[in-house]
Image (tube, rainbow, N blue to C red; front, side):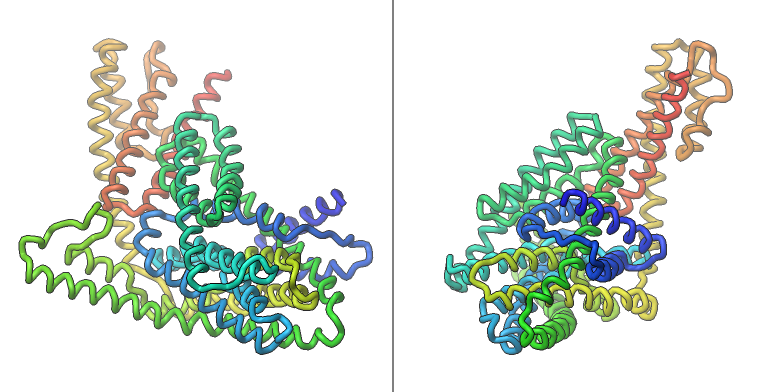
Length: 569
């Protein structure tokens, strides 16, 4: 059995690698190949408890995704993200539940709603990868990524409620379910913030990237498990931890950031490849276990649920966005009336300073949250299902209280919805983006303006640092060495992006590379600190900041590599 798992993982990774090389959707190809391989006589049958699979796969995937999301952009787009991550999931689950109950009454209403909760949350990983490649506007990418972070919490909370009804552990009461969801949110976020603070403090105090990476791999499982044990949302715990750690990542050692990115990319690649291969291998067995008379009913059910999933999303996205914009405009109007009635409160900030109340800030929120019909068209069609739907379906198949045919039907429907959305939406989404020309030239120009402005300020900060360093240099090496320092500093300012180009042409024997290394590292440090200040002040977008810091990290890595080469001679 151990060898079988190894072969499945290796095969899944190999197929996914070919898909990435050819530019094909890897989840779809892995699933199809695994489905074909399942009919081969020498392929063994393996089974994994669905809850175990969910607990192994979900935490690292969510944490990795949260690390890459801009916390600033996430908070600005939170109203839209909430509508999609909570409202749309609930609407989809209810719509699917009633349609599924009508098409297959043996599911029972709780079982049908359980199925709805399973297929409701889309996985935006594929959509985000496509959008990033084709240059989707940042506001659309933020909404898609943010939705995928919180919709799993909504889905799994509903799953827990209806699973309890099915096994007879509880009865469905609307207000109790809402209370359970609120408790899950509060406890989950609290646990995630605590884990985020602890992990960040560890990363600030430990410079060993191997230790930091190891704790980073373990932390999502700890946050998820403890939050679930305390009746909170493990999903929100992991997301909150990832957002906190990602927001503060630029303050940590650059080697930790250098190792972290490829580590999580590899983990995501491995886990997703395995899950899609596993579900492909399971489908023939599930179909074989269905009663002969139920096969046709399940196929009709799967097609019906797929259609509902495809239709509900655009029917929700456009009205929800229009309502959100209307609500913000009404808020602006109320503020304008209030300002006219009470002039002395015109500029009074909100309690705690967390919500903007001034007229200008509210209008800015309206502008920032405005999406064109083209943006909403992309969001409406970016509803591909993924790992969470498949893993939750396998977990549901182990529930006591479900009819055997209902158990198998849930897995089949989840498979059809996942593969169907990957085929219909995943393969056509790039064409839609190109056809609609969903790009934002204004955003690109604003990024260029911010980069030019911050580079100008960076040079000034760097010059101030060099003036201070010049005094220390004279005290340490003597006034006669200031000429060497000045030549080096001049080249450092001129060629700040090329560490090799800034070294002096000729330094006295007593002044070597090891003396200049701290100077160059300090130069990078003050410029990196400036980027954080600009980000915190709101004058530099977090996405642009990450790009600039990544370039500085590469510079510092080159410096250390050059120093290591010199010292090893």
